[in-house]
Image 1 (cartoon, rainbow, N blue to C red):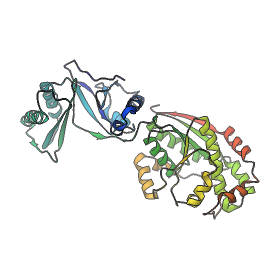
Image 2 (cartoon, rainbow, N blue to C red):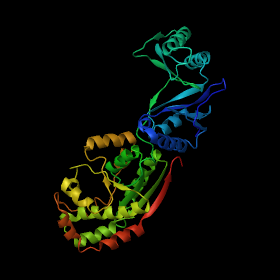
Image 3 (cartoon, rainbow, N blue to C red):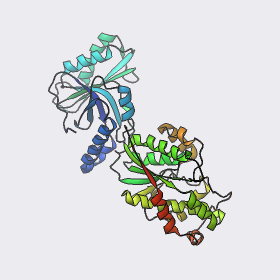
Image 4 (cartoon, rainbow, N blue to C red):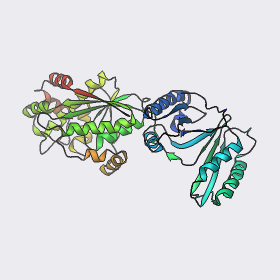
Length: 399
């Protein structure tokens, strides 16, 4: 990625102007975050006809060819965390006449009744103030199109950004996903159930810069492959945000069968969950993941009371992150719909959370109570059995 956006040619360069927000607050670590954001942008668009990626002051500019499909580019950039907003833009020399000509070409084919020019000078040696630029170019646009100036609610906004060595023009600014670039926040192992909650939890941690390893527990040979297929589709969808993923499919049915034979019904769900945490921790250690992630929401089901959460998490020595802990089901469902995981999650299946589950489960337990219930089980053997039987799948985007 180039560190500068100098322009010497008179011909405008087509591309995408990318602004970041939270990264700008990182001080001495900013270059680390920008380097990762640049790498993610190139990964997200590696199959498109674009590049190089330039780095003018306070922004990024990804060059595009004429044939680069904008609809696809827009979809890709909307999944790159760290972007505050982006726009199809032209980069050129900071020359007022060149700017005016480019803007006239861009607006001449558009239909609008009102407009405004929004110029920003990043250096004060340019011979015109921002207001003078607005007035001069606005007059030319008005003569060309006959539209009126509206500074508060225009149909069209023409933005101009002037730097010492380059100028940018764009008309259609789009919101980015925000957050921090994936790869800046470490690696986490996420228990991906196939339901509505866990994909949203993974997405929220990706937005904080974390790279996710997915772990799905299934009940084969006592159930079909439906839950596994769902988990694969969910992991594939979420890979759009981190570009490469590993999904572990862990057979859990025979382990559940042993638990049923040894543990009273009201405590089985807690024993299942504690075993899942122990197994996921083994996978996390292999993947150099620093914490586990779950889609738990306080009070949503019996295993998610504060007492049971405390009992379950004591089975893990790694931190357990619960990004949905204070959200209700409507809020989680809304986010699932926004990221596109909801329609996959509601496909019927027999996941391990619904297999071998008692009619009534304990809602307020203690660690001592559950530890006593686990004594008949050979926990080390069960964890090793699941770990050795786990099957991993590699996913990438764009594939």
